Each structure stands twice: as structure tokens, then as C-alpha cells.
Length: 234
Image (cartoon, rainbow, N blue to C red; front, side, top):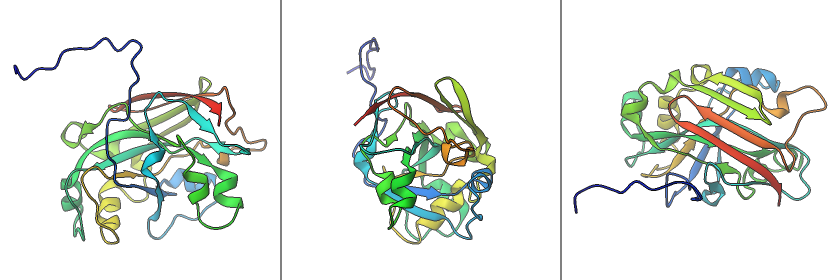
């Protein structure tokens, strides 16, 4: 009645993703110049678009499951864009940013053998259970300011693996939102994962240090908070 919420003691409480009833998770692949270089890929002429099912989304501290028969589970810290207004056929970058509610940290976990070596599209390597931790916070667009000035970092077992900036994006956030709206309607609560910087296991020398049960991954984006996941076998 007073318009206030009581403070809770967070000890022992699970932190879920900061977004409920997500309609779709749209992902942009190969969207950082340095990541394209490390994987030997040419920078795409247009954004590479694929999907993750909404049921891959878990909380920022939840367990990530290494799929059965997986040998190439990989990490990817990403800036997630949360849509705030229905967007269709947007014409300008200014209009695109006006449709953004806010931003969050996303972990686009990927199984590279399933994704690249098993035929078909990328879907098999992207949609395993628990493969999209999100959060801890949804930070509104006005508090973030320029989305092209954010630093992204990821550690595996305490070792820094990714240390990038959204300034390296091939297609900036405004262009990604505008572009995607030409092909599908974006609704409030939809999420766009905007790609990852260099430093993934796929881009490392052999033997590539893919994730195994027992590993701990921590990741953060400046101003958007920090995640921590322990990996276990599915």
C-alpha cells in the first residue's frame, strides 16, 4: 500500500532471469571483428541471424549442463538487448533504439561439434538445456546510455578468456534491431543476443580448452552485473 517493497535477505534464494515469458531469443552470429578474425571467418555482409528457444534461458547463477556426448562445449559472453515496444519495419537507428527497453548480460553457451560438424543449421549446438543464462539485472536503456561503449569479460576457472568491447561490433545494436525488424516482428520481452568478442575456446590453439563438468565460468558487462555458473554433466 505504501508503494514500497521489503528488502529480502538473498542468502539461500535462487536468482532467476530478470525477464519472464520471453517470446523469442534472436541471436546474431559473428558480430565482432576480433571474433571473426580468431575463427578465420570473413566478416558477414549482413547480420547472421539464428534463434535460441526461450526455454534455454536460466538464471545467472544456475548450473549449466554439458550435453551428453559433448566434447566441444564453449563459452560466449554477450550483450542482450530486451525489446520494449512492438517493432516492425523500423527505418532508422534512432527509431530502433527507441524500441529498446534495456540490456542484460547473456551467456550464449554453444556446443561447437553439434553446431558446425553435425550438418544442418546451428540449432543443434545452440539449444541444449541451460544454454542461455541471463541477468542478473535488466538495466534500462536510459541508464546504459551508448550501448557501443560497454566492456565484456569472461573467466574460466579464474583465468581471463574474453576481454572485449561492444565498440568492436560489426553491426551495432541500433542496426541489429533495425535489421531484424525487417524480417520478423519484435515484441516487448523479446531478447536479441548481439554476438561475442574474441576469446572463445573455438578460436584457441589445439588442444582447444572446451568446457567440462566441474569448470566454473564467470562473466560480466560493465554496468550490467556479473554471472557465475558451475558446469555439470547432463
